[in-house]
Length: 364
Ligand code: ADP
Ligand code: MG
Image (tube, rainbow, N blue to C red):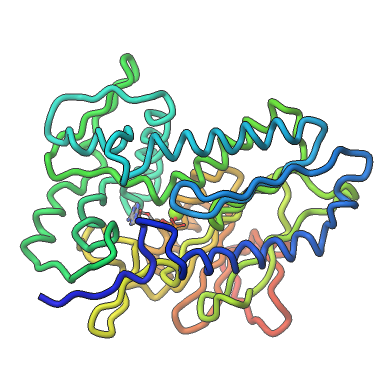
């Protein structure tokens, strides 16, 4: 049995990973600051409150403007930390761990927050025809995305894990807030939706503090509340997957989320083959996609996060076909060969760098 190193483990804030996120945050921060200096944003307003911290297995940055900014930012950080304790796959006392330990057994009572997240995840699973499937947890464990050291599982192991991959088998009862995983091989993993979902809940929370301008960056899942003081939109950079120190263009963002999935951020390598952390729920293997990254522009972060993962599973052609059936979001698809395909509804919203060529799809 040969082992390989997980490049970016889910386990701890490894140095490589922290650096990658730092670059992402820096790039976004740089652009946002360049386009909207604090003094400009703040004209006639209070000082911004900024919170930067590690939670939900990634680096978070929240920047809030308004009279109640400090209290709002504290509440926002507290909410994220609460989510972390409820949903962490690594904490055996979290709601998600308890559910996974009970797989194949009776229903388990969970918090309102967990119930609502799982409900949203199942909704998105149905919406994406199962390309997004939150029951891939066992597969992720098998492939070693929970550990430092990994190996390529054999076909028999994959088949056993696949027996638990079925989002339709998750039973939810909203009368008593219980969830039941009917198959003993099922393990939930909400890593593909939790940060986007949290962005939506933070947006609601900040509204309670009369915050009408904020930038939420949950490990590269960007939520923009409001606009600059002069009424113009903020800009959010989209990273070039073939060179993550560069960006391919910017999204002009106002009350919107911009969420990217890519094989370049978390992966493991074995015998020179790179395996991404996104699983194909049909084959049980990490996706072998012709897409290097998918960026979704959507009004809701939960939807954007799930879609970014789902379209990575679908690949280029199926993603375009999916968008044509559901054109209520914007998408920038970067292929492994360096092409960029963008939905036509993002014309004027996504502005590519001058040396970047983009092909648009869909009627204008
Ligand atoms: P990131 O979490 O790095 O921002 P994504 O939003 O694409 O990236 O989510 C990838 C995560 O989603 C994986 O780390 C895993 O937790 C989970 N996941 C992997 N494959 C799937 C899938 N097919 N459906 C739902 N969730 C998935
Ligand atoms: Mg996602």
